Length: 71
Image (tube, one colour):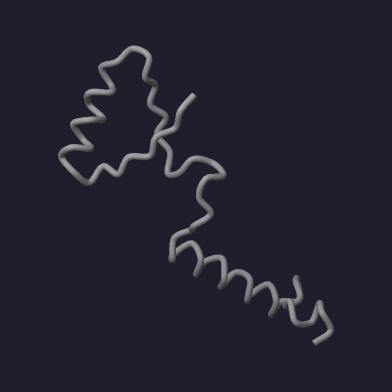
């Protein structure tokens, strides 16, 4: 099996995708990203996770890293 990541922001990419759809041995699996191939997250997701982390520390649910290392 081969995974190909194509940015759909050009006429050539859209044409290639439509061409590939006509082939019976090609299967499309639409995802945001293939699992395990990209560890980047969006700025919005990062900020949401960060704010949640800060709230958990304030509520005493978790400890900041500096306290775990005794610094």
